[in-house]
Image (tube, one colour):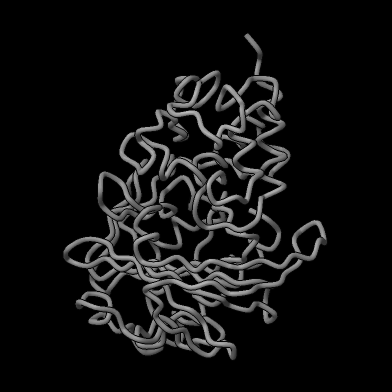
Length: 340
C-alpha cells in the first residue's frame, strides 16, 4: 500500500473508533434491500458526517494491500454489515456477505482535508444477489446523486511523479459495473477477500466490530505491489490479479481469451508466458505473445497496458491514463523471466 493509502487507512480506522464510541444514527437498511435506488447517497445513512465521510455505526473503513489502479485516484473504502449479522470468512473467495450488506467506495483526488470526491460506487447485497450503482458528487462535496447511465467529467490532477494531467474521467454506468464484477454471470465483490485485507490488523478489526465471523491466524496475504522488499514475482502477480483477473479467469468476462491471471495460477501458458492470442488484431500491436519472456516491449500485455486507445487498452474500463509505475513493475518482471 502507498504512503497515501496508509494515511487514508489510518484515518478510516480512527473514524471507525469515533463512530463506534458515539453510536451515530443507524444506516437505512431498507434503502439497501428494497428495489430501486435512492436519489442521493445521503439517503443510505452510511456516514454520520457525509462531507467528511465519517462512518455511521457498523460502517468500517478498510484498504487493500494491492489495490486496483483507477487513474491515480485515491479511494476511501467502507464495509457495512447489518446488525445481528456477520460476513462469513473464506480463505480464497470474496467473503460471503449477508443480505443488507454494502461495500462503499469513494473515488477522488487529494488526501486528508484536501480530498475531493468525484464518485461513490456501491455494491448492495439484496435477496436476489449483489447490485452495483454509481453516485456522482456535487461540486460542493456535500452529497452525491445517483447516475445509473454513468457520465464523463473533466478532471485535473498531479500524478506521483509530479506530472500534471488532465483527463476525461469516466464514471461507469450500472452495466459496466456488472462487466468487471461478473463471475459466472453473477455480480461478485473483487477486493473483499482475506488476502487483500490481511494487513494492519484489518481482519481482526472486522471481527471485533462484529462484521466478520472469524480471522484465522493463517489467513493468506498478498504482496504489496510497490514494496521493494517483497519478491518481484509476488508483486507482479498480485498486480495482475487485482487489475486483470476479475475478467481473466475461467468464469470471468474474458474466459474465452485463455489468459487466466489469478494469483494461484501456475500454468505458464495460461498466465500468458509464450502464449499466442486467441484472436490477433490491432490489440496485439503486431506482437506474437501475451508475455514474451525477457522482452517486455515484445509483449502484448505491456503494449495494451501502455495504450489509452479504447480499442487496445487493457483493462478496457476504469482508466483514461496508463499506470506508469505498474507498467514499470510488470516490465521488470517480464524482463526477469527466463527465455526458452
